[in-house]
Image (cartoon, rainbow, N blue to C red; front, top):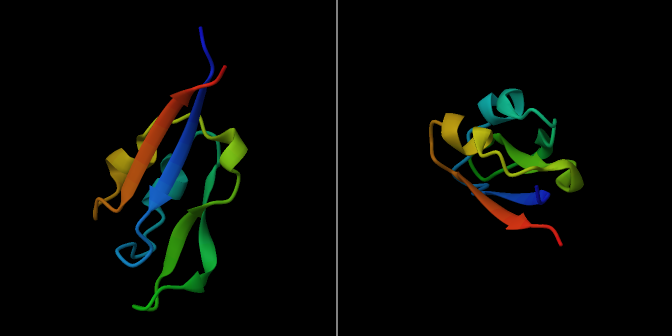
Length: 75
């Protein structure tokens, strides 16, 4: 089976820092950033992009639908 590489894109301004995506990530790819967005929330980001498998758990649990997950087969 081909290895899948994932990429998570977070809309920083829409993220309210609830950390549900961080808890849902089986690879511990996501974390809350130390910086805050314009609304004062710590937003989610990919702290370990190389570990992402593109499972989309983060996007499914996000209550604000501010996460998009892309998947690519690794060659």
